[in-house]
Amino acid sequence: LPLLVGLSQKFINRPVNNLQKKQRTLQVKAEAIVGESIRLIETVKAFSREDRHRNKHESQLDHVLGIVKEKSARKAIWEGVSNIIQTAIFCASLLWVVTSSGTYGSTSSSSSSSSSSS
Image (cartoon, rainbow, N blue to C red):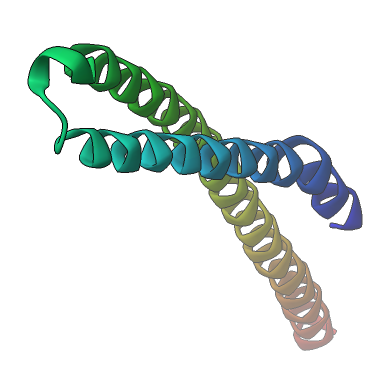
C-alpha cells in the first residue's frame, strides 16, 4: 500500500498538480486578454484589432481546454486503477476468509466423523 501511494504521488498527483498550475497560468492570461479586449471596446472598431484579440483569447482557451482534458483523463485512469485494486484486495480477502473457514470446517467435521466411527 505505501508503494501504491508513492507511485500515485509520482505518476498521478504531481503531473496533475503541474497541469493545474499551467491551467491557472493560462486562465490568468486568457482573463487578461479579455480585460484588454473590454478596454479596447471603447476605441473605434477599426483601430481596436478586435479580431486579433478574439483569436488570441480563443487560442488561450483552447489550450486551457486541452490541459483540463488531459488532467481529467489522468484522474479518471487513476480512479479506475484504484477501484480495480480495491476490488481485487476485497476479493482476495473474501476468498481467504472463505477458504480459511472452509478448511477449518472440514477439519472439525472429519474429526467428528472419525470419533463417531470409533
